[in-house]
Structures are given as structure tokens and as C-alpha cells.
Length: 182
Image (cartoon, rainbow, N blue to C red; front, top):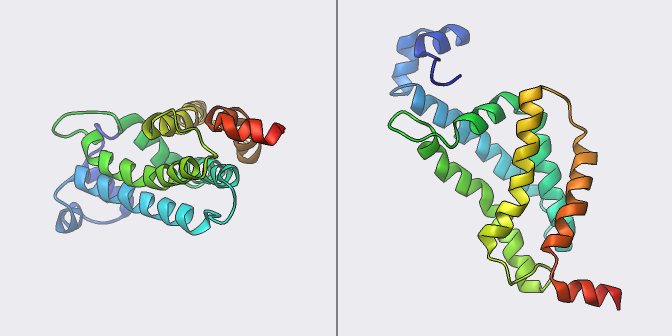
């Protein structure tokens, strides 16, 4: 884990000297924050580039959930485990404080999506955006923990469809549901 890793071990695994690590980073905290930050930048760019803004909120949310699960579970399992295990830690050397701005940037596209959904009347307005964000990301975080800890493969498409089938009715504005029934 992060706490027990040393810059010497990191340098050895990369095939470089420890001095080279310190040429670019003040320590493992800064190095780790940079690696995770670059990973988040890739994820954010993928989500923002692919988010189908011309489609309805449900289609956008489906894209977000599916992309989130795919990027975390198939392309970044090790980084996912690091973010999950260290992301809430506090203290001088802990990563939680360093990850907080990254996580806010990461959730911004979801917050925008939910805000647009509220403005269009597709997403309920009686629940604050922060709570709606937690409603979407909370179950996904639980799924990620389960997949990473048990090291079991997850059918991303099936999981995303099932999750959306549960989430969207809870997010959907009651008026939109009534209008659909009429």
C-alpha cells in the first residue's frame, strides 16, 4: 500500500535511480498525486468528449455510469484501489487532502449533467445536487470496492444497465414520470 511504499522501491520498479524521482517530485506523496491527477485528467477528458449532450438526461447518465465503471474497472484497477483505500485518509502525509480537488474536478461533469437535467425538468429539483451526486456515485463506489477487493471481473455493460434501472427512477422528476405515463 501507499503508506509502506518507499521512493526507493518506486524507483527500482521503474528502473531509475531514486535521485531521478527526486529530480521531478519532492516525495512519494507528490508523485502519487501527479499520477492520479493525470489519470483523472484522462477520465475527465473521455467523459467530457463522449457525453452525448444532444440526448436526454437518461442517455447522458447511462454514458457516465458505463464510462465510469469501464475506466475504473478495466483500465485502472490498481489506481482505483489506491484512490479507494487512500482517498479518505487524513493527515500530513495522507492522500485524502491531495485527492479532494481531483475528485471535485472528476465529479464536475456529473454535477453539470444533473444540473442540466434539473433545468430541463427531467431530474427532480426537490433534492440538492450534492445528494443526487452521492446517489449516483455511492453505489458505483461500492461496486468498485467489491470488484477490487475480491478481484473478480465485472460485466460493465450489464452492471451499468442494472444500476441505471435502479438509479434513474429515483432521480427522475415526478412530473416527468407522470407525463410519460400520460
